[in-house]
Length: 94
Image (cartoon, rainbow, N blue to C red; front, side, top):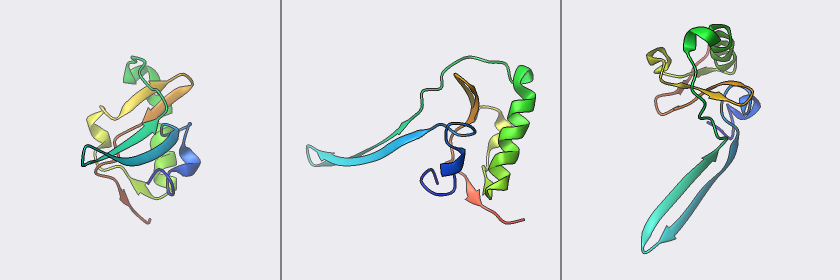
């Protein structure tokens, strides 16, 4: 999703993706997704407009998050809200 559907939203709606790396170590397959650092505490009530706009932007590119209502999928970056955890995400068409 990050490389295609979410590419245009990186750094504004979803964390910026710096790369997905694969390798092997000790006979084990390893992988690592490197994303923008987002770890600032916030209260969702203070950012309700940004959350609504971010969710609308996600919808506009045809992505259904799949678990956004739990509220645990929003983090604060240095310049605004980001949506994270696309494990249950699906493409959709309206």
